[in-house]
Image 1 (tube, rainbow, N blue to C red):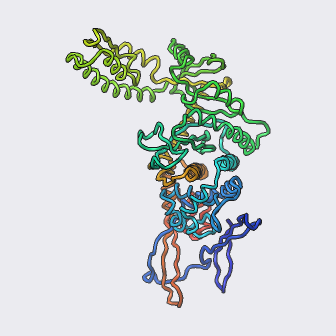
Image 2 (cartoon, helix red, strand yellow; image 1 turned 30 degrees about the horizontal axis):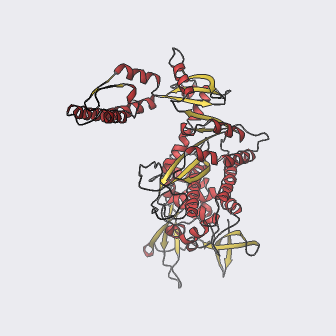
Image 3 (cartoon, rainbow, N blue to C red; image 1 turned 90 degrees about the horizontal axis):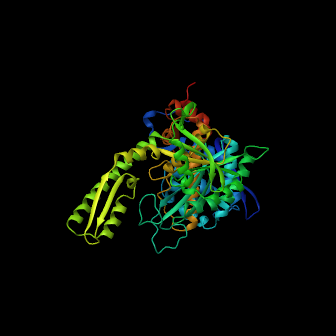
Length: 565
C-alpha cells in the first residue's frame, strides 16, 4: 500500500492507494481511500474541544507491517486462484484481516468490520463494512485444502528469506480444539476423539504444526479430523514437507540442499515413517517410548557407573549417556537424558496416583472381608487401580483364595520404588540418525519441541492468538479459520523477532495495544463541520522502539512528536 498527499479544492489530504488484480476484467485496478487532512491541525481553544474516542495504532500497525513485508495477501491470492467476494475483499485480504483480529482483539467475525474501522492503520482500501462474516464464509467454501497448502509453502519461503530464520531443525506436534457443532450437523473435520480438554461430549478439530527452531514461527500446518491419529497426520504431511524443504532451500539461497531434521515426541514413532522422512530429505530426532526394546537397552546402559556424564557449556546441569545401536533394521544413535524437572514432576504424579490407589486398595480389602467380591472381579479392579504412573512396578499385591472367598494382601516396596527412580524416572531416550551431531546438539535440538508447545499455549483459550471462540459450522470455514489463526501466530512471532525484544509475546502485544491515538473534536469558529484531530499518546521507551521498527509514523505522522531523541 502506497501513501501520498494530494491537493483537492485547495486542501491537502493523505491518500492510501493499492493495486489489485481484477479477474473479471483481466487487469489490475487501483483502490484509493482518504486517510485524513495533511494540513497542520487548527489552533483552537482547549476549552472548546471534546474527546470523541480512541483508535489503535500499535498492534494492528505492527502486524500489517509484517504482512506487507511478506506479501501475505499476494501469496494467498496467487495460491488460491485470486478468489474473493464480488466487489469485495479477496481471500487473502479476508484471511489476513481475521488473523490480525485474532491477534489483537479475538472475537466473532461479525465484529471484524468494527475492529478494522477502530484502527488507524489499514490493511485494505476497502471500507470495513466489506469485511463481513458472510463474505468470509462464502469465500471459505471456495478455497481448497491444496490451495491453502500452496499458500503455506510460499509464505514459509518468504518468512525464512525476510527474517533469516533458522530452519535446519523443525519441531512437529499436534493438538486439537473443541467445537460446539451439534451431532446432526455433517462435518468431516469436527469429530469426537481424544480431546485435550477432556471434554468427551464435544466434537474436536485436530491441528498439526511444524515450527522453526527459533522464534516459534509456524511454517507448515495441517488440519485433520478430530478422531485421526498423530502418526497418520504426519504421514499425510510428507508431500508438503518435500515442497517445504525445497522452498526453504530457495528462500535461504542455498546452492546445495540443506540437511534438515524433524523433531517430534514418541507418539510419532514408526520405522516406516523414519524411512519416509529420509526419502523427502529430512533427518529424524524423536523421543522413544520407554517401553521400546531399544529404549530398554539404552536405559540399562545408562545405569552403569560413569555412563551418565554432564554436558558442556550451557547444558552443564544436564547429564546424558550415548550409545549407537540398531533400532529394528535402522542404525540409530540413542541418547539417555536425565532431567531433574521431569523427575520432580513424575514424583508428584506418582504421589497423587498412589494416594488414590491406596484408597481403592483399602476399599477392596473391606469388600474382601465382607465377602462381597469375587476373585476375578478383584483381580480386575486391582489391575485397574495400579495401571497408572508405574504403580504396578513397586506396589506388590498378592491375591489368593477361592473364587467366592478371595484374599488380598498388598504393600508399597520402598526398594522397588528407589530402583524405579534410578532406572526410569526423570529420563528420556532420544533417537536420531544424526550420528555426527554432538550429544549437546542432540539434546538442544530436542528441546526445540518446547517451541510447538508454546505455540499451542498461545492458540488455546486465553492465549495470545486463540483459536476459539469459533463460530464455524462448515469444513471450509473451519479450514480457513484455522489458516487465519496460524497466520496470526506467525505474525506475532515475527513481530517479536523484528522488535528484538525479550518480553513475552503477550507482554509485547499488550505494550503495542497501548499505542493508541485520541480523537478530539474542535471548535474553530469557522463555518462548516467541526474538524476531528488525532492526538499522539505518551510513549514508553519500548513503544518508541516499536514506532520506529514498524514505521507507524506513515499512518500517523504526528506520533513522531511523542518521540524525544
